[in-house]
Each structure stands twice: as C-alpha cells, then as structure tokens.
Image (tube, rainbow, N blue to C red; front, top):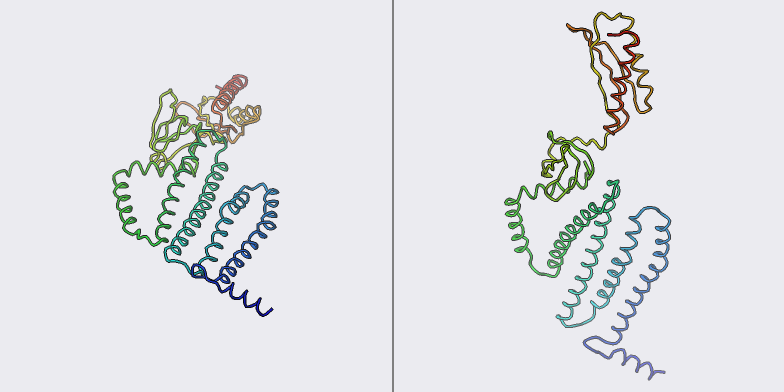
Length: 345
C-alpha cells in the first residue's frame, strides 16, 4: 500500500509543460464542476423560463430567453474555460493568446446580446406605433437596425482593441476630428437624417396620411432619409425636407376625430321675433337626423345694415371630408326648406 501511494504521488508530481499532473487534475475538476453547475441551471431554470415565457403574450421575455441561450451561456462557458486555464503555468505568448481569445469571444457575445435588445426595442416601438405595417415601413425599420448594428460594432471594436492593450486614443481622436469635419460639411444632410429618426420614432404622420404644412396640403407618399414626398390636391408632387417638417407646425387630417362646422347667414330684419326665436329648434331638428352630428348652438348674434346675422355651429363626428360636406349641404338645404315653410326671409 505504501509503495502504491508513493507511486501515485510520483505520478501526480510529474510535470509536463511546467505544470504537475495534480495541477492539471485540479484545474480539470474545477472546470467540470463549474460546467456542471451551469448545465444544471440551464436544464432546470431555463426550462422553467421557457414555459413561463410561452404562457405570456409579451415578446421581450422570449427575446431575453433566446439571448440567454445563444449569448450569455456561451459567454459563461468561455469565462469558465479561461479562468480555469489562467492559473496554469504557460508561455507568455500562450497566456496572451488565451486572454485575447477569451476577450474577443466574450466581447462578441456581449455585442450580439446588445444588438438583440436594440433590434427588439426598435421593432416593438414600430409595431406599437404603426397601425398599417407595410413592406416599405419594414424596409425602413431594417435600415435603421442596420445603421444601429454598424454603430454598435464600431464602438464594440474600439472597446475590444482597448481591452487588448492596443492604443486607440489616436484613432478615436482622428475619428472625432473627421466626424466634426464631415458634420460641418454635411450638416444639412445630417439634420434631415436625424429628423428622419424623429419622424420614425415620434410618428407625427405615416404614409397615406393627409397633412398640411406651411400652406402645402397633400397625401404622404414616401418618407425618405432626407426628404418626404407629398401628392398635392391638384396631382402635383411636393418634396419637403425632413428637418423642415419637424421644425414646422404640421396638421394631420387623417387623425381627426371630428370636424367643426360654422354656418353664417343673414335674415331680413323685418322677420318677426317669434320666427327668429325658432332658429335654434330648427337647426337642432335638422341635425338630429344625422347620427354622426352633434349640435352645439344657434344664435342671432349681430345686427347689420342689411339684416340680422345668424350663426349655427355643429360638429361632424367624422374625419371623412366628403361625408362632412354632404352633412353640411343637407343641413343648409333643410334649413332653407324650413325657412320657406314658416316664411322666414
């Protein structure tokens, strides 16, 4: 027994590449234990998370679980492998390569997780704001996501180079100077580009909406990175810069819920006060024939040199302009018939 123990000790003390077999065994055991813990967590907790997210209607939890499986778990396995091998004796070049590989892997996985969150946030905002999700709008969303990916990968690459010990201060300074020069040279284009993002996220209008800005009215045909194109009422195309749209007062007729109508007319001063007092009831009776009309008031409000000026105000509970004009016409003609019946001049 004593000889066997001595033999085992000599075997464990045998050194290979600067480390004893006992050190290799301890490192392997610690890594296997850590892998086992992560695997058990993945097997039990992740399964419950999947069942929980499947029962909810939200999408962010599904995204987080997917990111946990595809990015966080591989990053944990990479860290376990790196931390286990780090304490072993090895050549400086090999140690540097191990550190570099682990840093690159964890950084890439972290960037992928950040991109998944950004992509989900942009798509969720678009789905919550846009009622009609057309193919053109989906292409815009994909374009914004692509630009976000480029920015995140550039920032992640700079961070990675800095963590690897590469001096990036000169590169960042040069990038900043170049960015300032480009911004000064193309400030109009950049202003329209940032205004495009404002239009996308704030959604003051969408393709197909009828809008009015600075006297120009038309239907939105296309929202581009620099300009927005409207189809005018006479059939012409109006091109307006995105920055001008965000800086101006804009009327969106598509999102109207009601239209206010004011009818102003004059009655002869020789009409009897009793017939003039019936004006309010006449107007109300005409408007009650329309289910989508709301009567507000009717008054004889002014005395002019030619007669008595009257005013009738009502609301058309519709955004449809043609329906509004049909209702207005019907009320005017109905009042005209009633005036003739009772002899109002």
